[in-house]
Image (cartoon, rainbow, N blue to C red; front, side, top):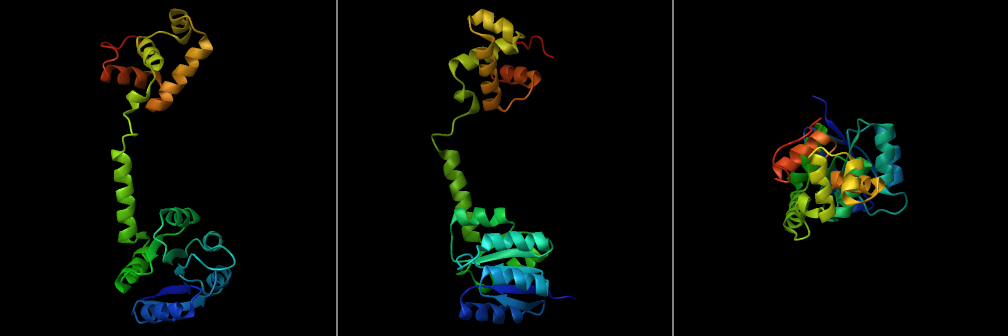
Length: 222
């Protein structure tokens, strides 16, 4: 059975040595290279063809995010696992956008890192439980936010009026005449209400209007 080939990237020698000892002692893993900065990580990835590159964030020189992009471009089969001290959502997002498959905090238990390496090698992804919990808490706070309104509540009175008239089967030109407004203005109201409601055609608009009791009977569908 082939071992998981790992390159360790970190600017602290003692930390690299500790990771090498930990990973190298696993029967299904082997350290095939190490790098003290992001630029060296690119070289090591090209030379040793690893399965996994462990990548630090705060290193001098070339950005680790740029190194990740380059490694993924040169060797799509090599997967990047960030091993960092930063429990920061912005860093996490940037890591994922650069092409990383996982994010593990340096103060995590050793088994967590080993589990992350195996999971990523199997084609999955991995996120430290603390970061996952942080993201879930952030999501919950956004959902509970008083600023979050139902889509219908975001419509202006004029947009609701245009919604009703459109759903009843009136054309933009007819609505413009009824409301004594320009066709261009009605088109703008129509665009805004469909964008806010995430509606893309007249059938969906009529169905929405019926569901919200804006109209009772769908007229002129199609």
